[in-house]
Image (cartoon, rainbow over all chains, first blue to last red; front, top):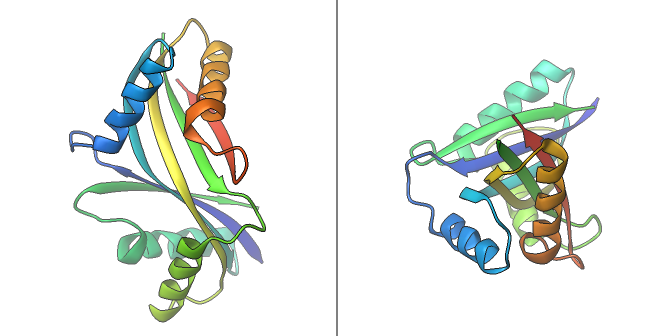
Length: 82
Length: 82
């Protein structure tokens, strides 16, 4: 079966995120009210062939741990669809 | 109320995504089987003060259209939590 996997990788809370701060300032300058903290990370979408959903999720988690995320500075979430 | 908004911005299907291709090749080289197309975009998390969920979602969509996404080359999704 082919699964679509959505991965989010974002800087850990408490770590400096200059890109997020730049976005927050730009949104304020554009006139959007009420914007608090902004964090910018990566969204990765994969097509993944696997026997079942649990296998796909385990594989995607291993991919995050080995390549997609930096375990020291980033948190990741994996969502399997279809 | 404060809402947490999750935004995903990814390159449109059919557009060249060299970063996604590089990730797909790297995953294959690491020995992960069954990986098809990979697309890499941005994950943006915002804290947003708004009266209700619908207002927060409308504001986040407007932010995507004006700043966070390139309407020519990228698709975005908005998810409001809390």
